[in-house]
View 1 (tube, rainbow, N blue to C red):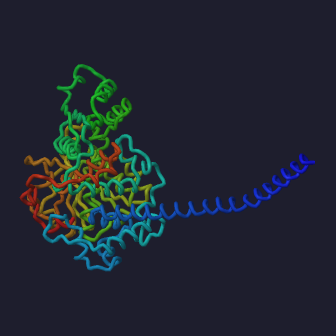
View 2: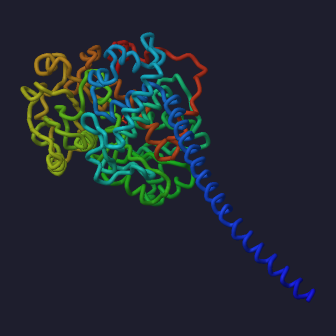
Length: 490
Ligand code: CP
């Protein structure tokens, strides 16, 4: 009986426990559910605040010049239109775009920075105010991926180019010798130049050094084991064991790609015979964009005149391909008949919807040109051609520019120019003309090549926060003829 009662009591207890358990279970569920929801809300708030903080820190650490230039590029607006959009006078905007060390430089108010960031970020979501800058990006490109080598401008989309330009803007204070960085400390570059060069070799080397790396050089075949019959494959593989990146200039079209096939470290084409010169084209286009920015013009719809040796000039081959990523351009190609641009390049430019006109003389061909880009005759590459047809009327000098060009034309040349008598290359009598952009081009070689290395070696995100002030004294103007208001504005 007692046992029975005991059992009954146990059963009751179990039932009570069951009930208790039952009654307890729901609140636990509710409680755990609440906790789950609460955790989710807390996490979302945390994420929101972190993202806001990240964007805020990003805006605050981005220099105002980079922020404003990037916004104008994204919105594809001229300075006048952009100034109106953000509700300031054009002169105020110009003062914000000047380098920090300029006397006329002014700080952008924080409220304006926030507004610019807001309207600029909306373009990413497809809310474009005028023409977006990324519409022709369906083709191949590296955006979102690691760029392995830079061999041809064919690898780049318009978005890729604009991204490199933004990175180049970030590099400007370093290139202008106001800041230093060590993001490539310990890295080594091999500069392998099997053809003559001043600009490309030295500026690639200087760009690598300004990022904190160091450079090994070899120049010409004579001092390379290629003179003993070593193959490109062996040379490339051997050098790859010594360094972290390679820049190659070679007299044969396609040779730099052969170097790239033999290595997993980044290879940059510093000019392959009459083939391509992608870094030159990037710095040329960057210069055009900066010159146009000062003049209130856009690349879309511009008239570009390319003149000189368009058959063998690799810089013009790369430049016209890059420009054709933009919209509605008119190209006037001026050269003797035997030095015309290769047909396959002209066809590809036309397929992209641009207008191409050919002329065998600059007379009456330059009237509406926004850019006059002239090149040296590459006699060293001639096979059966002669220079007899390249007469004095091809010489770009004060007389030609005064008679044939618009007053705001920008005069460019990749350099070197042949200054010997009878060469009919770009004349030195334009040296003091502010429209001559040749030394602004060469200066822009540093930030562009720094951006290329930073991208190839994956340190592009580290540069901005790593900068420190320089410790040595630097001149305000690098060259004696640089003190033009236009030069400081662009
Ligand atoms: N523009 C250019 O390639 O110059 P260098 O031949 O001096 O490198």
